[in-house]
Length: 205
Image 1: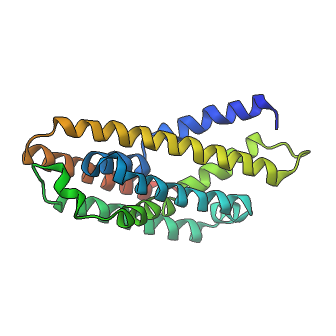
Image 2: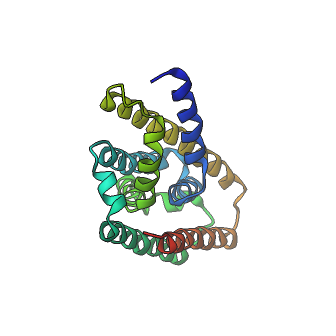
Image 3: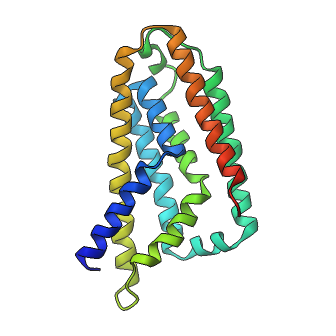
């Protein structure tokens, strides 16, 4: 793989990670409510979910899922239900004057598991990678090495972008001073999760 091809993929991966999605919503929400330190667990979880998709694509299962209407629909609807459930939980989450108070209610392990599920149940990631990777692969070169390079690049870029979102969101908590504002933010992110679920539900298999 030439440096020119890798740079082209790097730019594409940055756009892919920056684009609003369920992972972005999860990072911003956690960063604002729990702070950037605790939210590192959720970033790790997102990468575990993403790594699973990369592995599927790498061994060829991604193509099978992308071509199977049944497999795609199954994963899609699991994702829809999970995202809507997250949205409802956010709507029901008790607002607090002190953002630190929320920190003791959810463990880092819970944030990690939640984030893994957010990315794991998003079949659009598989479809995107299956459609994208071949554009940057050279048939004359070792496929596994190229897929490894693309996979690692994707994970590193997504980690950096999610860390940016979490850090930025955590800084905004300094300006939150009322339960009314916190309640509004919970409803906002809850609606965004539900919106992501609705978009996933409307996606064509």
